[in-house]
Length: 640
Image (cartoon, rainbow, N blue to C red; front, side, top):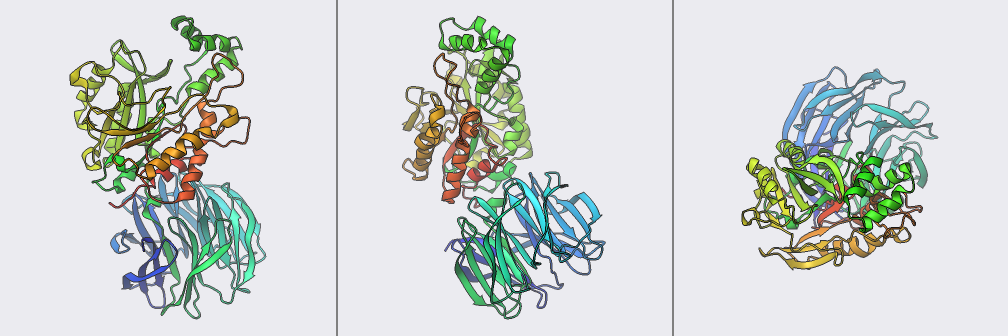
């Protein structure tokens, strides 16, 4: 059985700590990895991830606090922090907000609450929410992690008051989203992601009542999916357990030490028990750590990939027309300028004339909406986990200027690369595939100026013709050359110029370049209709994902564009399908939620590791502020 999830436990009465594995089906593997006796007693053991590493932390009643690393095999690593605090915080929880990690806690004595950052080396950073006294004490604080959104929740025995409150990316408290008094006090509470939905579950010692209730991504409560039901026992410790494809609850009773694991179905109801046994000891602290891929920082995800992996063996999130995020230069004067320089009989010129005839505001809106493919700038894309950039350049005198078709963008090639070099300097385990195409004419070649930029930063580039192993290109940009090279000396990089599909044949499979590298590329980008917006995903993206996952063409570099648009010749009506329409469903005049959402749902439904190739996207931060990017890179095998 594949070991999917770590179960850690600690018991105050015996001071025993253990680590054990749970397989993908929720079965406890009877092979203890750690079985230690600790010196102190801890009643608030928590886990969190920072910098791609997993840690546990706890505080003793004598106010001593520690943080210690947990390795992927479940063994304990070195302590990174041991200190003594001014107060004892009876409840602690780990938080991940944005790209940062925090811990939060509350003292039972004076109800003091704090949030403090945890740095990537496992040491405490600055307090982001300095200690403040709350009206009530919450014996159990839990974290609700819903995509990139982070909330904290808890219930107080005073009036059985329950709350949910937003945590901002900077570690400060946001608005309360839920505040209500419940009928019962639930001593145990836990947060359960299941499928695409999120739940909280708890049990009350009064009557042993257990419930599951949905919680929405805005931090409000939905319907009860498992209404309160009385169990035979009260389970003093209750936690959520996630494997790659399933969700469970696990709990132990203090009275008879009985322990069980039971599945929680995607609809928030209880499935079958997968484990029931009686343990020798009671563990008042239980912590489950899912597959470490869940916690890897987006800016450093390649650091967890094996050195020996060839780039063809990975799933690599990318952006289409990566520089097309600032289209503010498109104004009425610019549209008139384009009419002057474009051939009069060209379809794009006729379309522009019809567009301008509609009036300035409409013309500018349509032109900008057709040109814009991104919202995030290059540094933000890279920090979100993007590792493939689609760069379109045109030579203007002695400069390489970024373009999207006929639209000039306010970036030059050296400026683009400066952002990439800076990212790689801060994240030397990563690599960025730089696809470069000539957006101008063949009579105005760009190969000389590209070669000059590379020559100025040779140590930052891989320009070999073979697709490399990751160990060869960490800290480097990898050139994927879509442009023709006029000079033999400039025929550098992975050559894709001759094998790239065209508008008549937008998909190629298992084609070989002059250096023996095979490609499978899907780039069907035009002709989409408002009446069939799911056509791109159903007929092109999904079949190509399945082709890559099936490994029909091992060694192929798969590139599967999710992007597209649709204009109807020179006609303004029906309205165009903009890149944002296809990606996000904006201005679709329907309930269509976007190709990106369809892709995320498809990945969630499969829940397994697979090398899917390069996936260039428009607006990949949608939906849920980057969850699609994260879900894509999580399909990789993180074995480093």
